[in-house]
Length: 297
Image (tube, rainbow, N blue to C red):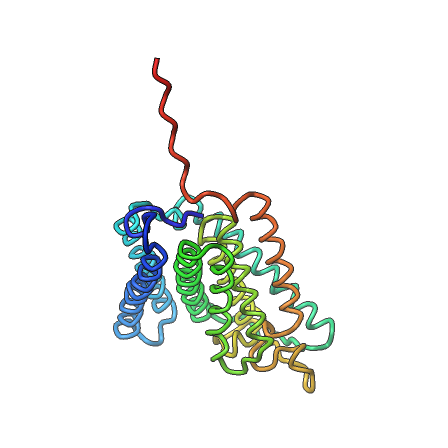
């Protein structure tokens, strides 16, 4: 993972402060870059056409990522390797497969323990749920990983960066309906998992793919609450068993607030961190060392 070494992030005095200022600037820049097209899609596109609304969200997400890449090129003097185009499809596919597998394991265990009941609803259009999942995944991974994790790491080192990004990610979800301390802990651990995967791969694509699949499988495939909210129509409908303890079912926040989700996410996080450590990603230099001058004859 490249942290940035040039221009606004060049070595020298006050680099930590320059990193934090750059973080704030990029946050507002990409927020506006996403928000304006997204609002335009709501205002201009037919409200009842979910497919067109989804296309509008894709344009908004691409605009935010493009503005980030341009700002990094101008402000840091480098290409945004974290958004490299060649690994897009394999990265998204790997992340999506992992997210789907994790949610299937979680819901299977919750059903097996009697914590949840699942009924079949039938086919439903996925556009609305997919749009919400993509919106959350792209914006949160861009802001939490490419901005917060990377630039806190640049300013203060890896441990404060991982801790800060995970705690902020968990903290912002505590405002959601039905949030509990256990929900906050699970989401914070999920934030640490996304940080580890971003560090391991050096790209945003695996975290984005996992984030989309986790939310979409939870809300659209299984029809459960997603962080206290709903994604709309679903194929199945998953409801907590009446009288089940909230620490097991997750309550109205959804299955990701279950202690079983915390165990599952922690397991994947530790595996990703171990792989990142073994491959040197947690300590690797952020820029290649200068080439030595050839010996003079």
